[in-house]
Amino acid sequence: MDKSDWQNIFRSLSLLTELGLIIVVNIGVGFFLGYLLDKLTGSQILFKIAGIILGVVSGFYSDYRLIKKLIGDNNNNDVEN
Image (cartoon, rainbow, N blue to C red; front, side, top):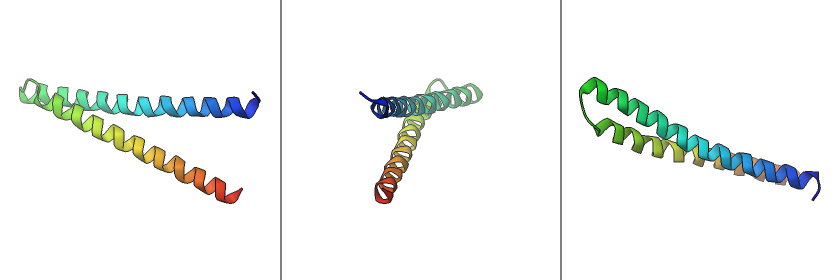
């Protein structure tokens, strides 16, 4: 394997890591905000669940936007070459 193969492998691995971290961080932030709202309102679990759901949705949407951007960049590079 030459250097460009290794670069492609590491680029792919970094993309997978970034996609996973985006989802985990969004869920964590949603849960934390839900926890704070539960503390403020005296609720038990309502806002935590809502925060997790919103975190999952926003995480997947963020991943979708990133993938869409990368696909668009790759199509532009293919046209130029």
